Amino acid sequence: MQGHVRRINVLLFVLLLVVVSAPHRCAAEECVSGELGVSWLAGKVISTSVRGREAISDATVELFAHGDLKNAIATTHTAQDGKFVFPERDNGRYLVRVSRDGFVTFAVPVRLNKLGTTPRTLLVNLGRRGVEPCGDGWAKIVLNAL
Image (cartoon, rainbow, N blue to C red; front, top):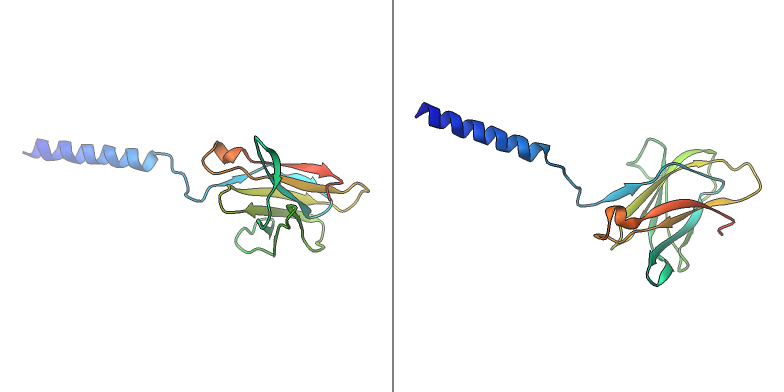
């Protein structure tokens, strides 16, 4: 009888290890790009499909100070043409997070440097949920985007 109880305990322990070590996916998926250098905290949010690029209106765009991802320092929404602009900020490191129902939330670490003559802004492609990892979303720098 003790051998039987011991085997059950070992099986339960192994099962617990399998459950704990299994990969977990958050229900609210968020993807993060590499840091991008911008000269203006502005940009455009789009989604690409077989129909081409479509502007995403009414997406929520939040701005966070580097290292503080709980307290947004500014929030705005994209216009009909997908464009957004944040008020003037000091040079430094920030995180821009873009979200919209039906799309994967996308976060872009940015380094703001207002020196230079060519405007460098963000172009964020929101990926659709359930398509590929990150919904095939991406972010890049665009010169003279706005």
